[in-house]
Length: 390
Image 1 (cartoon, rainbow, N blue to C red):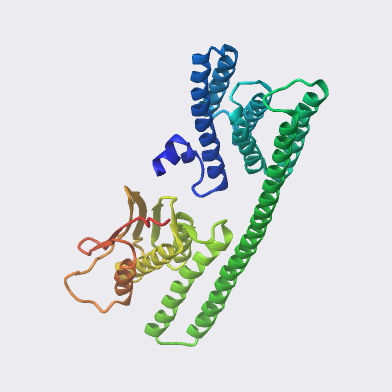
Image 2: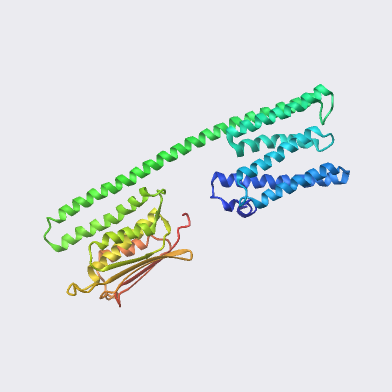
């Protein structure tokens, strides 16, 4: 069924679960059903020798198929809707006027037309179209009454059909008005929620900056280098988290993060603490907020460890390189952090909070795989699958 909607009804050209996709699939469904019905009655007219109606129906089939083939590349949903509306209007008028030519379809076109009008044109355009259509249809029973010419039905029944069209149109107008009103309220509520989420992320970032300021001011009073470094490390972690909230409220999406912008901001922040070169090669991909938070903290811990431990403090003139890449690989991603420092023996057990955090955070990524090599500098490689819900 998904294949039929996406391919045959051309829903693949529109955003999933959007109103445009629904309208597009409905437009194409109307075309295909209309073509099928028209071909059935064209065959019937051929067998009965009604060649005029046969040519009219084949011409309508041709127009509908052309509209189907060029949609949505050359004609829009609105233009296609007008083509179908014109066809339905013509068929309704013909089914009421020409005797013996498919009069049983009158009720089908009568019900289909107002539904299509209000669904695809909306309330305002639907009212104008239905009003004009009602005036046009009203001339049919009036003309029959004044001239005595009998069409498909007597003028009394024609009047009831026209009145029925008015009633059905009015009912659909009420339904569509209620739906449009409800949709507007939902859109307003959505905008309010987006503003609220933006404010929440903004306040969260500000609160983290206050905490960072307190930790930094407290670190000035500490003389022990070991504890002073602990305060600075916690400030860096908070900064990585606050940058994600900044990224969220600065962009249109409040659930997804552009990982390139986010990680490069962290890299720029860490670069201010070291003379060593931090080089990034990051793909511009979008990930969910939870994944971005884990990647940001892993990134921060990996680079901070390289800054602190990779290079010999005695060789102050030697500038090291810290390289970070984040690439999309098939159905997943790969984060690679490396340096050209002195490395370490990975077979030994270290009580390193940074490495522990990297391993714990990588475990939160779907189907993760982590490898750490310390033979020639340190190379950390983390691969994981893409979140299917994104």
